Length: 128
Image (cartoon, rainbow, N blue to C red; front, side, top):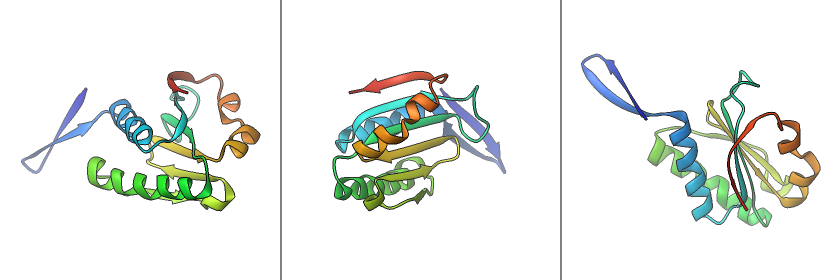
């Protein structure tokens, strides 16, 4: 659903958070991210509404995903994204305020098990 806000005689159309999350998931899938999980944690956390958790198969792929995600968010969602972490460390985090995206190496995802830590969240989408 779209939200319309009126400010100084300008009508702006904003995407609902869930629609943004779905666009990001679609983008990550196109970029070959693996094991994409969209998790609704609105009732569990105050700092964000959704987690998107996915894997990249190598440091290079994680770096490519983070770079292209930053460009996609700016161009398509009009959001400047700050991405923390290094691809060589195996975990990058992109904070879009209402959506936090975790880009993992398979090893670190298995180690930290965010899905289990946030298991009371609602799985919206799980692409294997």
